[in-house]
Length: 92
Image (cartoon, rainbow, N blue to C red):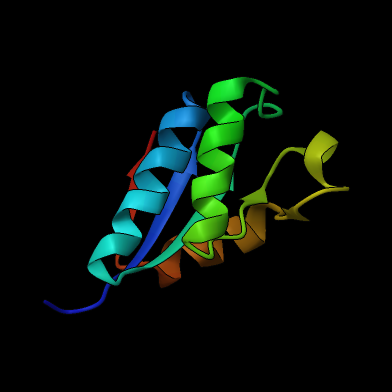
């Protein structure tokens, strides 16, 4: 199977976006995760998924200004480039 560059956009369900992003690395794909629409809630479920991201060597990014101190902050142009450079985009 050919390695794909996959961009996961966490818009509606951050927890599911983290789970999917980590799972896609099993197939050897290069995965980027971008949180959108609001800050990720500090819940036990999100903490567990964050551990999976760490194990999968995925460093999340964000378009949410409030999260910019903790994660790389993408502006509209950078997000557009990330989308254009990806083989697949998953919107969750």
